[in-house]
Image 1 (cartoon, one colour):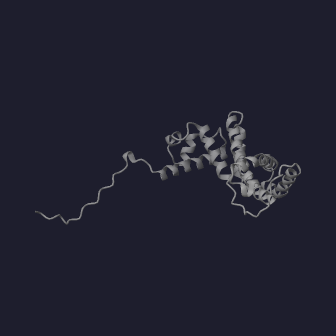
Image 2 (cartoon, one colour; image 1 turned 90 degrees about the vertical axis):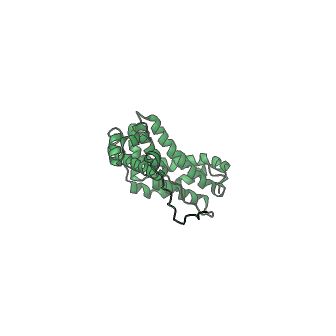
Image 3 (tube, one colour; image 1 turned 45 degrees about the vertical axis):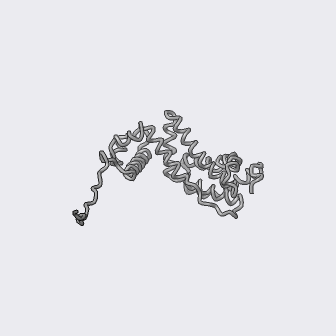
Length: 225
């Protein structure tokens, strides 16, 4: 009976993926380059003067890569707007549990204004407004995305320690919407009309305090502390 061979066995050769399928990391990198290039071009040239060919060139991606992700330029622009809203209207950092209601509203109000008054945000809003007559649904979507996100953050600040419950968030949402109308909307409108962003930022604290006082006198803050 022959003994078993003691020669080392060759390691199995790794098989390449069929068709050179890109990894998830590579796909994510292409997604990022397309969105960044599209954002730059839309902000520089506006919606009408930007083409998918230009985006593909600046993103160093094939035109087919864009159309595999977005059916047309409108969908690409919508993705740019959605990405902008989600990245600029970031969730505020966890607020200390011992803050008063006024302190929580000041913190979240300042955070929202800081993000909303960024030059890139205002510039993109202007592009959205110039396309509103042809793409009204996009304008409504942009407003709804930003508003819903802001209302959620303010509602959580109002609810405070009870923010983890859906019932508390739902009850605080009408108050939060009123706060957004008093604080965020006027500042963004002034920014869109060309007011200096630095000067608007300086007015944040008194604007927020005035809004809190108005809500308090109107009974909107009753039951919250």
